[in-house]
Length: 100
Image (cartoon, rainbow, N blue to C red; front, side, top):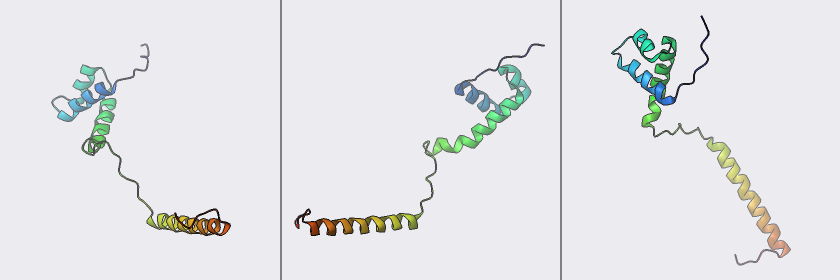
């Protein structure tokens, strides 16, 4: 028996097969025979579809990463100090006019 070369299925085909598996009208064996795909592959695509279904209603956005407010506030404070220092140093040197 000759080995079959590796096939690449389009995302449309995968979605079609996974949706057919989710509907449940046919068994995995019937779907595997119909689409010429191994039943384990159909099970994987079905799981991927059910796991990623939330993203459809999310608008495709991934959840926002958590923001560390302490770090951000510390950075704002540091930048404010640097700006104040530079402003005073430039005004002492006469490079910064009193009128901004």
